[in-house]
Image 1 (cartoon, rainbow, N blue to C red):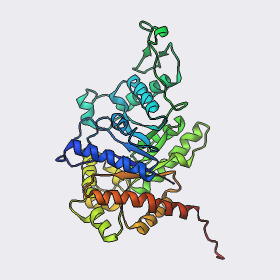
Image 2: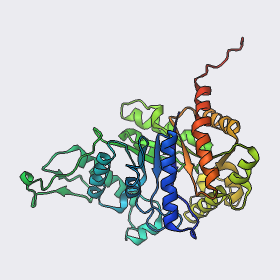
Image 3: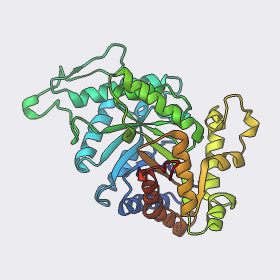
Image 4: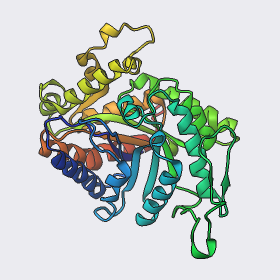
Length: 372
């Protein structure tokens, strides 16, 4: 099981923006030093708490500050930019990072972003689907281009302006061949979008704020999509994000990871519950579909979505999660605001140096027979 990192991020509004940007960079630099496999960073245009406006631009500042970790958009919101802009910028990032690039994609879920740029009343899922078709075509084709898919608003060609002998009218291709890995974040239980991911060889990342009992529905749908494409689903391609805090002491873990009114975990899930309620998406926190909204309190969400404890307790919880979901390729650690930077860094260190090695040792250990 690989260890990954994901941050939206979510910071208190009163914090200085420059400081939180430095903190978010520091977390990924630390993740690289600790051997995390990849790091995903979210983006929003109009959220003062989730305040990275362009994840690709942010990650570009980390190319030369890190050595091994793959730098991932988490996500690039495809409905918000022309697909040619995304395709060529992603290709350049891939070259700058020499292949340490993962392209996370989504339509862009924040409605205030959509209103700000004038697409609130448009079908953003349709724009997303049209955009990804064009991005892949840009990467796959050579000039002269004539990208003109039926019922797709984006047409790409240079019939009037190309001068290939001068290099004019040529679109950049990525460093990785045939293309960078494409990852989609999955939030809803039983999401039909995961079937489409499987069919197109995009890889799912199950969100950290979805209840664990629903995670296996993502794998089932991914397997279905791969089968429909005549391919076999690979466990390594499924990422599962969880919100985890590890400490040297169980009492400290419980205080910082759950009880304290100033806990970043409490703040994070108070934010997420309020935003999901506002968007009529409280279902992500529900045990069953008909569960009353009134039961989805802040305490309920924190109780069901945060794993905290000393190393042994967290190892046991992860192994229990794996029994519930089945095997998965990467556990993605959710990065939060650093209320206490010492505890936050120590948690990442314990996760990388103690928890994951013990989890992997337990996974590799053959089960005892009844006779033993």
